[in-house]
Structure formats: C-alpha cells, structure tokens
Length: 250
Ligand code: SF4
Image 1 (cartoon, helix red, strand yellow):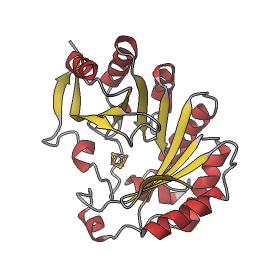
Image 2 (cartoon, rainbow, N blue to C red; image 1 turned 30 degrees about the horizontal axis):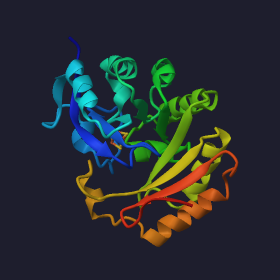
Image 3 (tube, rainbow, N blue to C red; image 1 turned 90 degrees about the vertical axis):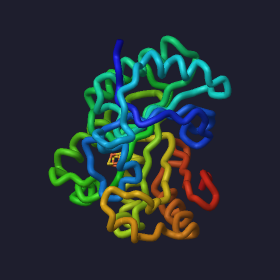
C-alpha cells in the first residue's frame, strides 16, 4: 500500500480548474522557498499540517464526492514526491475525473512522464528569465532554475493539452515591466491561458511580506491589459484573479 504526504483535500472548488468543479489535493514539499509563499505550511514538508495518507484512501474519498467532475493536484510542488505518479495514475484509471496538476516548472523530465495522464496543467512563470527568478523563488542558483523552467515550457509547447501559465503579482518583486517580459515568454511558448493572481499577505514564508499590501483591483486589471498587448489573442486568453471580483477575463 503506497502512502503520500498530503496537507489536506478540499472537496469542492470552482476556481482551481478552469470551467470545472474540482476537488483539490494539497501535496507537501517544494524545492523552492518563495519568500512570499502563501502555502508555507504545505511547502515545508515537515510542518504539522502534513501527514502520510494511503493513496487508496484518497481515491475512495474522491469517488464519494458526487458534485465534482475533476481533480486538481497542487502543493507545495506535487512532482517533488515520487508517489504522485501513482496517485495521478490511479485517479486517471479508477475514476472518471479530469485531472489537472499545478507545477512550478522545476522538474521537466518528470513532468514528461505525467503528460499522458493530464487533461490540464498550470505552471508558474514567477518572473522574467533573469536574476529576478531566483529572488522570487527564493533560490540562489537562478540560472539552474530558469534553465529548468525553460525546458518545461519547451516540453509544453509541443503538448496539445490545455496549459495555463500563472504569475502571482507580488508588489516589490513584480510590476508592469516584469509582467510584459513574462507575457512575451507566455506568447513564445503558446500557453492557452495566462493568469495573473493577486498576492495575499497572510501567512507568508518570510514574515516581512506580511507587511506588503496587494496591488489594488484597478492596478491588477491594468497589468492584465498590459499583458494582453503582448499575447496573440488567437492562442492565449488572459485572466486576472482578485479577492474583489474573483476570476475575470481581460
Ligand atoms: S509559492 Fe513557491 S515555495 Fe510556495 S509552494 Fe509555490 S513554488 Fe513552493
């Protein structure tokens, strides 16, 4: 019987899988240490919220949630645990649910193995492909991180499934210039969706970020409009997610 470290399962979400009602499974651990991380308890695999759980138990729970048509496997970073492959394989083989993974782009070779199982993937493009990426991800070896995220983007460019790129817009790290540079990357690799997520200051990994105010709703919408100028409207839809109005197409 295989076990996997999870921080919890949400039975119902209308926000985590575009166009679907999904359960959300939070897997523990992450190779990054984004200072602004809003899931610090989950990213730190040794935190109290993480517990070993039988994969069979998770599958049984999913089958009992009749309202959902899909599952989002998120984290932390789902691909850091080798057991995640078995979890995804069993979701695909033993349920009728669509499967989405949220991924931070750090494991291109592992991701390749998962693609036949996936209906949708969201990956983080946290910053432009320069030193800023290391600062935003809390990694000093930024060249290594960027090289891996680029390889992930190239793999996904050749994959025909639905793929979303996402950026959390963290004031002090990400502003209009960064959003423009990231939009060019999103356009180059032909993501079908680009989503800008509002920063939330609760429970960040680095407590200094708890004193940073999110950008206003108006600023988020303007950043979405700036991004749109650099995206091919035939390939990529753009969305902004805010606490004020939820997910909005720009
Ligand atoms: S925000 Fe960064 S540290 Fe937190 S889970 Fe995501 S990739 Fe990991």
